[in-house]
Image (cartoon, rainbow, N blue to C red; front, side, top):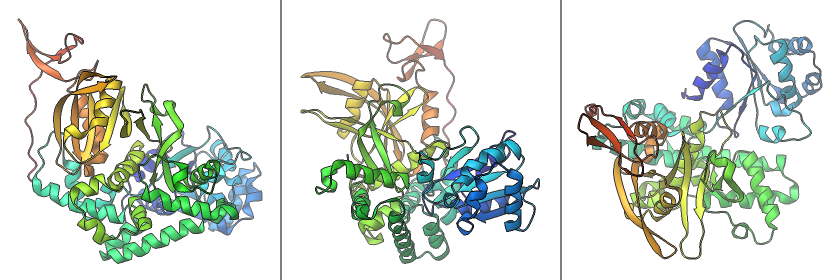
Amino acid sequence: MIKRTAENRLVDWVKKKDRKPLVLRGARQVGKTTLVRQFAEKMGLELNEINLERYLRLDDLFKSTNTERICKELEAIAGRNIKGESSLLFLDEVQATPHALKALRYFYEEVPSLPIIAAGSLLEFTLADHSFSMPVGRIEYLHLYPLTFSEFLSAVDPYLCSYLGSIEANDIFPETGHIKLLERLREFFFIGGMPEAVKVYQESGSLSEVSAVHRSIVNTYTDDFSKYARQQDLMLLQKVFNYIPRNLGRKVKYSNIDRDHRSSKIKDAIQLLTKARICHQIFHSSCSGLPLHAEIDENTYKLIFLDIGLANHVCGLDWLAISSMIDQALVNEGGLAEQFIGQHLIDSNLGLDPPRLQYWLREKKTTNAEIDYAISHGNWILPVEVKAGKSGTLKSIHHFIHQKNSAIAIRFDLNPPSEQEITCLVTTGGASEPVSFLLISLPLYTVESLSRVIEHRRKTVCKKCGKKMVIRTGPFSTFLGCSAFPQCDNKEKYQEPPEVKVNKDL
């Protein structure tokens, strides 16, 4: 059994007083059905699971508004009362009878005590069908993605997972623990987070069996093309499918995908794969204000794949290739590290919101600049780079900091955590101007702790401008003052810092 953090979301949902029917959304084979079964077992709920692909005739029944009649039919299928206090009704493959989704509003209004979860494959196409009216305000959504690195660790190395979760933002990293985590990270780069692939590796330790699972999942995805694309578009869809893993994190240019089709056709193919949750579009945002997605350019975007393990399989990268890559190549070449960070940032909103992620791009004749990802935390807009190298090579971050007046930047690489005050010159329009910022460098495997790290840093910087707070001594007391003084005159009470903890478990 693989523990999913999404179980916690289901626990929160089922305990709500004003609970609504829940629709579980996500790509094929990310573990939706297994998640519901494990949740029901954990909570001691009597699971009434009905696979609607086996009962297509029920679609006409769901068209009615008679919940009593619907319940009696479902009870006949389940062979027991489905409305007990400890029951859970699970309508799987709900896309097979779309009117079941519409009927959920009547369950919410007339049978509110019954917990109901609906899930299905390619559900996004049903939800996007404009001829179909969804019960707005009567249902909730939970988005499920492949396993995260910590979920992978909990399955294959529980102690190391516990160790990673115990590290605080101000801890000193033991080298042994860092090395062990990097070894597992390489494994995850190859295996990825598809539950079946992780389960096979957990049980057998066989990477060849993992490859067989990848092959099966990829074949399932390509076999699905005919379910949502016209026959004449299947070859183009396959071409786009193969293009994405080979061009992770690169700005999409339709001419690079296929010169024989119109841009509009290629764009449509990308939209289909996005609806199937096989890929995610990362749109350029001007990053001039919040929310970031309100300022996106829908014509400028890059793509990442659903899962890093599947991406490697499509590219033909085997374990030998990944295990033999030098560290700098693993981070900087082929987009693998950017894929890893991207699929975790998309999953960082606890599944409560649709997949949404942005990046920043500046294209000029003299100087281009691109930030891999742009994220927000409170009222902060932060650039995130995935790059190995010295701080002086982070030219794009320098331009972003200068243009957006940010105070903190995030870099992911393979080194232990570090913080560095950077001061440099940025040349724009023939003139050079100084910029200063705090560069927080984190190892890739800590991506799930990013929000915690940023929150810890918020407590030590100026609440007004985000610049570093420094200790100052006045005539009557010692206080914290903004390093940007006199431009910022913020002052805060000074407290002695806690003793730094050294984790010696590894």
